[in-house]
Image 1 (cartoon, rainbow, N blue to C red):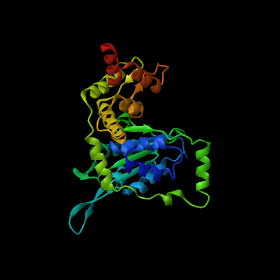
Image 2 (cartoon, rainbow, N blue to C red):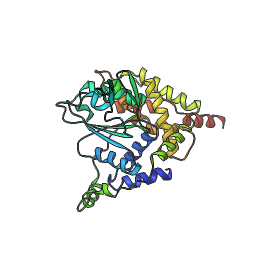
Image 3 (cartoon, helix red, strand yellow):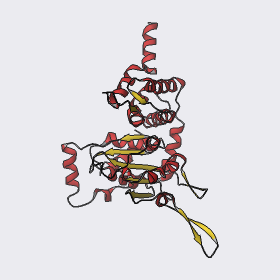
Image 4 (cartoon, rainbow, N blue to C red):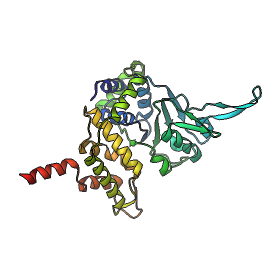
Amino acid sequence: MRPQIEKVITEIEKVIVGKRRETEKVLTAILAQGHILLDDVPGVGKTTLALSLKCAMGLDYRRVQFTPDVLPSDLVGFSVYDKASGDFVYRPGILNGANLLLGDEINRASSKTQSALLEAMEEQNVTVDGVSHPLKEPFIVIATQNSVGAVGTQLLPYAQMDRFLVRLTLGYPDYEAQMQMLRSRQNSNPLDTVNQVLTRDELLACQRAVRLVTSKDAILDYITRLTFASRAHEAVEVGISPRGALFLDRTARAHAWLDGRDYVTGADVREVFKDVCAHRVLLKPQTDKTVDEVLGELLANVDSPDRRSLLSSIGKK
């Protein structure tokens, strides 16, 4: 683990106890310049994790509590007529000025409001009345949705699900982690103890370093064969999109960089595969398999470069 990222994890662990692996996945997505969907039951620390990241990395933070009455203009801004100048003046929305946007319970917003995030997530700008307004760098969306209580919710359209680099869950803490959490909150709020250990410019430098990590043709071939196999699987209605393949490569490069390497291995791809691809696969209604089972079959049946190299070396002997 890179020293600067290790420091961020140490600070986050003051608040989010016993979830190091999940924290590493979130940071991997951020380093890959992606957006994160936290899909879990209420009360497991999704919002607290976002606040901890903000504190540890010194990012400009905005939060939206999505409800049915939140409008697209609340996010992207709007134009108002200025009587003095005789012109329309742009009034920025919540997205403007944010490095880290927490979209709480995004599935409780209307479809129209959910869609207002699409351009910002993909192109890092917003367009109002034909004029584009760039957003700050980095721009990271962490959206949460609860997997229980469907009343009053709107399912995210597939096109927007595909914009998220990863979909993650935190899960319940184990016994020791929950005991530690309870003890730490007896007389204070652990968020108050989180120190900034990374600057915005340092984070941007880390993201640039990730872009320099090399995926050789053998790795790109492996990613392509995995995605093609997903589209041909008998249980799959919609397989991994080309965007999903690009995101898989980006996330594998971030994983390799965190591991101290400037090249990607098949193990990097396998490690991030399910987090990047599970929400991009739609199964046929008649199948009795789960997405996790299908992705597991793909990993088992599609040869990786590591395995091919091993078989080749055995054959030469």
